[in-house]
Image (cartoon, rainbow, N blue to C red; front, side, top):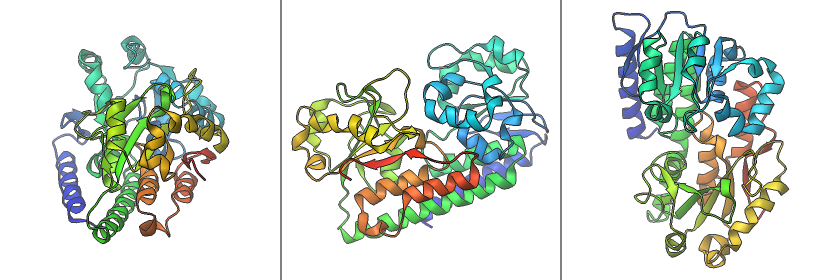
Length: 371
């Protein structure tokens, strides 16, 4: 394992040990470095995001502890995923919907009425909620912040162990952490060796959210989300330094940088007829049909990525998850195929679902346009 990963994990472990040894058995330190006192036995959870990760950490009965969710962030943003989980656990449909933070529809009244023992929310939700967090706490609902969006091993580990501690699933959380750390370390080692053989030259990579279709440039990613995956995979992210978290790049800039590899992030968005369609139950032909127009944008036929058939689609729901190491493998393999000849990211993705989740990964989640 690379030294920087070991050092970072040692720091995470130390901080978690400190939280366990504090005066209250139910005291934790969340990913915003906030000290939060939670009940010793949490049986009622308000879950804002990271719905699959909660399932993986908590096990098959994880949602027996959930009383409220931000349903638009699941059903609206990942519709095919929501339908797949709802099919095996119809009780999800009856959970209290507290609304969605980004859209300004979060309803604190519904949150309070649901009587959760704790609210587990994403860091981006925490920053957007402002004074709502204080109101939840004033109503006796402790708020714990986790962060998989940062797309770092450190935050993934801390968030997983934190959720495991809060809901009493420490052993399963540790197993998931060990699996994740080992997978990322393997990718880092392979990329380092491949880069050494190439004299340290990294391929230029452009990632774009395909929610708007080819007719309008969608968000790219700076340091977090897909930007973080690109960095770990050994690519030179052309959005780094141009957007802080996410935002669209100037089309002329993209063309001028002439990326070697392009990844378009797709999903099963509601009411977006031109979006790159990916996810559960999606046929690869549907994804390719929506992906092809990107190669026909003004200036794109001349891009190195287009000329060399290096246009890929990745499932947007796959980032910021405990199985995003499979997408890391996929992106790294696209850039360094010789180093990952014995790695099958698609099979690894399916295997993760088989082992840790109640549904199967049937659909389109990783795809090369030219295949």
